[in-house]
Each structure stands twice: as C-alpha cells, then as structure tokens.
Length: 419
Image (cartoon, rainbow, N blue to C red; front, side):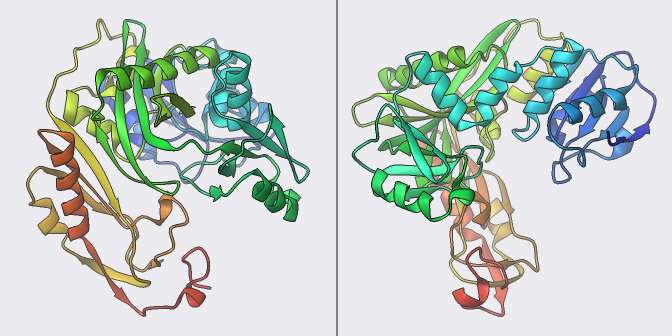
C-alpha cells in the first residue's frame, strides 16, 4: 500500500472529512467553525491552501478502489470525523467506501455506482419499472441491447463520461453497431441510448435532515454540449410536475436519500419526462449561483450546515426573478494573447459575473469537442427567463479573444491543440 502524504495543523472539535475537490464548499465548512481534513484524490481538483486544513491526506497516486479507501483511513489515523463532505463525481465512489467504514452519512457504494456509471443507472431504473429510454451496453465490440434496439437516432457516450466528452449523435442503432465494431477496445464500457427529442432541464435538489427543496433549471444545448442555463425554468405547473416527479422517482429507485443533488431530465414533445443522469453534487456551469440569484437559497451552504447538524429548518425560497448563465465558443483559431470587452460586459444591465476560460497562451479553435471547448461565460439576472437569458448572452458575446498566429484546422489537430 502506498503511504499517503500528510500535513498537520491544529483541529477544533467538529471535524469534517472532505473527500475530493470543490474548494468553495470546504471554505463554507471552515467559515462555520469546523476543522476540515482534506483527502486529495485528484491533482486537478480545486482546493484551499494546505495550511487552511486540519490535515491533508494525499491519495491521488493510489489506485481507485478498496486500497485507496485503506490509504485514507491510514492517513487520518486516530481522527474520527463527525461528517463527510464529498461533492465531486470523480471522488464519490471513494467517499462511499470511506463513509461505510467510518459510519458517516453518505450514499452507499451501490447507490454511488449508479450515479457515476450510466449503465448501472439504466439497469437500476429498468428494474424499478422506470426505464423510459431504450439503451444498450457495448461489450467486446457489440451493442447488447436491453429490451430491443430503438428504430430512430441514438446517442453513443462513455458510461462514466462527463462534460459531453466523447458523446456522439448517430443516425440509428445500425450506425452504432458499425462504429463500435471498428474499435472494440476504445468503445468498451460505452452506453448507447435512444435519443429522446425534447427540451433539456436539470433539477437542483437539497435533501436534508429537516426538509427538502427541488427547483427546475432550463438548459440550452447544441448537439450534446450545453450553451446556457436559466433558473427557474419557464415551465407551466403541469410540465414542472412531470420533471420533478420523474426525478424523485428515479432518486428513490437509485437509493438516494439525502445530499446536494443534480439530475438531468429531457421533457419530450408529449410532455413525458425522461431521466438522463443524476449526480451526488450540485449543478455545474454556475447553476448553483443561478439558484441563489433567483431564490435566495445557497444550496451548498445549506448542505454543509446540515452535515454539521446546524440546520434547524429549511428556509423558504423567494421569488427574485430569473437568472441565466451563457457560454460562448471560439469562432476562429489561434493563440490567445489577451481579451477585449471583459470590463464592458461587466457593466451591462443585470450582469452578475463575466469570465474567460482559456488562459493567455492557450491555442483555441472553432471545433466543439466538449464543454471544455468554451471560450467565455456570463451570468445575468432579470425579471423573467427571457430577459435574464438575453442579458447574459449580450454580455458573453461582448467578450472576444485577441488572437495571434491564426492556424488552420490541420495545424490545430482534432482537439483544437497544436499538432
């Protein structure tokens, strides 16, 4: 067993074991007076400065699985945390193993597996009678369909993927069969799903020991890549109830009973809601900021306070209008030398935040391979969804990169990187 690297400072009485990243959540626990023991699972995860933690246990070089859980327990020694904070997809399976060993509140390993592996999730929903999407698993270069292949378009995606990386929209199951057969190793573990045509949404949930709240966010997508969000979704009561009912039934079937949660749902043209995936974390892309701007609820803070046993009642959501996050993508290729329009965008009506994504010196191009291909972001508020979305879109389109050394697609290569 690899011995994890450890650093120490003094701890107060209440101790939170934070497994994986999301530095902003760690900061909230510290602000509430807790000592935070950070388990570093991935080098790229966000974290606070090491001296802000009561202890840092680095298991990023230990293979995932029971051995990594053993390394965490060795690293914390005789410490007995009062609660566990784990909000990153790449860390929740480790979190489940550690929580089970320490008797801390968290989803079980079986439940956690269903939130990170789409094949497991689909099988669990089928077993509960909630399988509304035809699907198959890729094994040895073949698609093994559960209940028969669909007649129309399908989506091929990694079983454990995120940020739309590796997602392909295909004409039908025949094309999927032909494609996976070309490289059985590369496509092993992928999922093929019936492509549901409709409007994409997500449900942001906080389920605590004293109550729960669920809100619906509308998504904008181009192919499989999300280009914007607005909260609350502009839905009538019946449509909203369909989305929430599908979400709550799926969470129950998967065994999710508490936590900060994010569930993606497609509402088709008939008004039927289909669960795409669910996560033991809050929504990305600034969605939690949208909820805060539109309702006054800070879901991450509520989650942390509940873990610390300090949440006496769920606060009521307020109607503060709508909030939207919008993203732009590169239109040209080249090396980023700087940015134009950032300050101007921040001064536009209703704008709450503006930022750029590539660093100066990065090479960008117009290929949209995943959500990581984005150029800039903006968040804005307004009295309704239409105005909030328009304000955020105007702001993000004001931001433009200063490019040097414009390159051809061949020079850039397929992923927008220098070849």
